[in-house]
Length: 369
Ligand code: IMP
Ligand code: MG
Image 1 (spheres, rainbow, N blue to C red):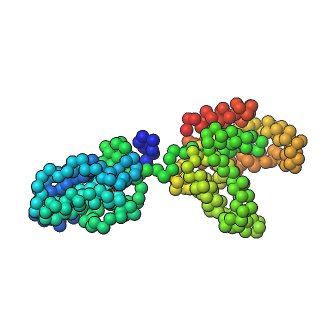
Image 2 (cartoon, rainbow, N blue to C red; image 1 turned 45 degrees about the vertical axis):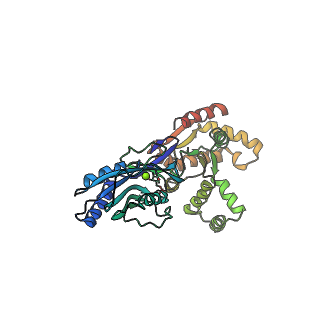
Image 3 (spheres, rainbow, N blue to C red; image 1 turned 90 degrees about the vertical axis):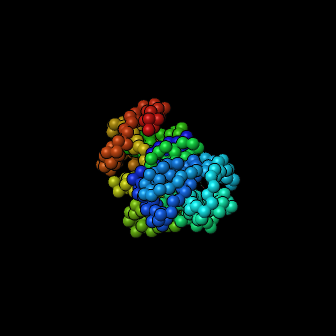
């Protein structure tokens, strides 16, 4: 991943793949033109790298020149194309091949055709390394296309984001979600997970996704996924991971601009952890850390018995039940601890002390991510 100005980009097309595409363009153009000596016209600034690589590969004599147009501001194509340097030589009767780095909306190409309208060239051929078919809304024929790409903003190999990135030999794609901090929060019963989740969500402006809440919401509102989940629960069966993941996906999509998420109550199995990784990957993001509050069993028992006196929760009243719940927690989470530890993403945090102290310790971990 790379950062240019304020935005993050991920690797998209390698130097090697670009080289293959350029070679393919060279071969078909050389084939088609035979012994004709073409004039290759690069469109500056973006095409400088393509033109250089292209003409080095071109097997026969050719001429090279440039025109300089400007259309992009930031990551958006603008309406008016500025003609900064026009044609500086007479191309009457010549075979001209335009070498473009990328064709997006086609506005630049329209301007190119305007430039050549009265030039009386023998033929005007258009060759572009990258082409975004979903963005193109003109009718001009594209004679040679190196690679079709989705309608996403890219940088590298001549292409820039506000001036940066042109020098990169590989091409990178804008990440659809920008830098997020995504946490999986764990803690045995009585560790104060709920309390800490509330503090962290405020402090880091994160969205707290408690799987239990998400289930209850979907079932209460009778969403399609809620009904599906309920049909399993009614039969006394476990809700399949795919259904749960789809619910989480909806939550993540509802909060597309979020700084990140705190996942609470999910994952519980290796399979779920993998599914969550896949979900985050599909959002161009990742789980950054599993943060687990660590509290000694005896302290937990004391806390829960104390809570049981006022909460009226039957499972908080009996020491044996409490110890069992804690044991079960460790049995279940050991696997996940290993899963995240293997990726250097496991962070145990001492959960004994004042609420502020514990928040402080959690923050120390998050700030380093
Ligand atoms: P068009 O006029 O919309 O076809 O855009 C063509 C010009 O916009 C290219 O020559 C580039 O300078 C710029 N451009 C289009 N798409 C991208 C991109 O994804 N990254 C960087 N520049 C782009
Ligand atoms: Mg360009």
